[in-house]
Length: 463
Image (cartoon, rainbow, N blue to C red; front, side, top):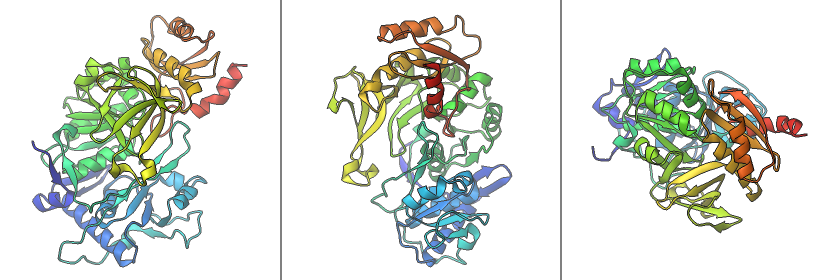
């Protein structure tokens, strides 16, 4: 199939009764979705909101949320999805102020802790215009802002570049398992991160339905794949671990299952490949842009790699500000595409991750290391993550580190001795090794281990 442009409005014209979004007992077709998006977009224009204005919403992932997201994209507004718990916490309102949010859209009356004049609240039903003009609306360039929690668990907004061109839809590429003739996308993590929302929103625009799994469990994930004939899905790192631990395989094999957001130990990834088939599609990036991708066949040839740079992106490994040769470890930096830059100063992205490139341009990540002094600890994490039975690891401390190691069921032998050997090879003193069952370490809502939550514990152990 050749790459081509598609949008929900084309889906609505061709098959208006095709199911678009399913979330628990909520469901809509493309005819309703496109119409609702146009009514919301016209309602925003009727309110006199200038193009480019930033909206926020705490609508749950479902038909009404996706209609608002499409309205923002087509009618030229920014949209910042944020969970209700964050809106009502002390952390959410300052983020909204930083983003210059001018209107918050909800489905339940709430009070936000910012001056009402700066951020009025409106119900999404109140935004709906009475009608839209018969002629095709003039499209504009809309965009989304995403929340990220990094490894701290503290939510932060990520500013993204507004597209230079008006909305036309997305390029449908069969590699991503979405299109007018393909099965649904399963949004298994209903949080609004780039990695979770991005694939779902892409699939919907490409012509696939989106099935939202609002409550996570591995057995429900497998059941929904079979029940809906899912062709694409996304798994966050902790959910990938759950699928491996559950040991369940669907009868229907998806075309592609995306995963990313944190390092995936090779042993665990091989387990998931055995369960789901050679359909894993890993990516690496930040909330500003996806940087690399790798398919299962590529990964089996280069276990541990996260792939090569996407077209238009150039990767560079730096140590103390200088580029290093292939094979040497340093901070992963990326020269972004113009479309991903809000200003010329954003051309070079410092990721804060450590890794190396091989001679063919394939990137491997060894851990977090925003400063050169943290590189040895990142290397030790990488060595431990490759050990049999290890699910994930965090290394904290300098000369005598504390290693928090998640292990699978009944690893034989235990990894303590191998961890000590790896530490000695890298010049560390004998480390403190804390073994935890898989999934026991604290994680953010995007599935990453919360390193900051372990620092005080490591300090007590290291005394």
